[in-house]
Length: 262
Image (tube, rainbow, N blue to C red):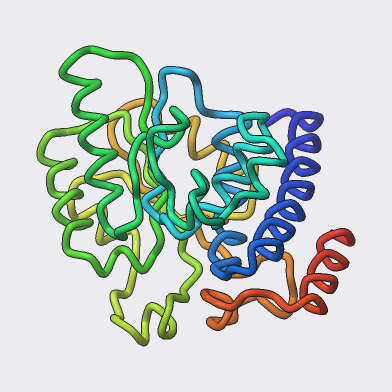
């Protein structure tokens, strides 16, 4: 990625990270940790990668806040929209709901189903000879779902592509570390055994994320994107509690102060 473009993206990520914190504090809801771990991937995709003919599925539905903030950063949502996050009768629910933005084609409130949806879109594009790529963002906890592995079998069997899958590997889920809850020993070899291309990347390195997307112009490719839950806020980083907890006003002020200094 060109240096000037990278610097603009980094500045946009900083601004959007703060807006994400504002949004979650104003609404009084949690899930901020996993939203912060996913934000860099979403920002790279929507600012530098996705074209009109492409499709994106947020399988990690509880990172809806990060998706909304990203869409705000590219002008698809306004400040007044974000003020409705998690409110009664809102379109910006805690998990994405379809039918009001083309960037959100499916509801992904039930974890473990997003990869199947992405695979179906990719197969449909292939069969109908339609242009465009498909991208999907999963959580590492979703790898404990059988439907995810069924989707991988389907993808490999049908030689589906171009499909790019990012797995947000922050190592934490609702009740502990992913290893404590269901030790999977998540490695690239598991995906390569399916006959799929797989690599590990730094999920907060915008250059690495961008390069991963450029490499994925054909076939299906899996990226284990190593991230930090609560990235950028010291008291949230790698802390399981921030899978759920809302912020107090003191914590909110501290979070903004730390993000400003990045």
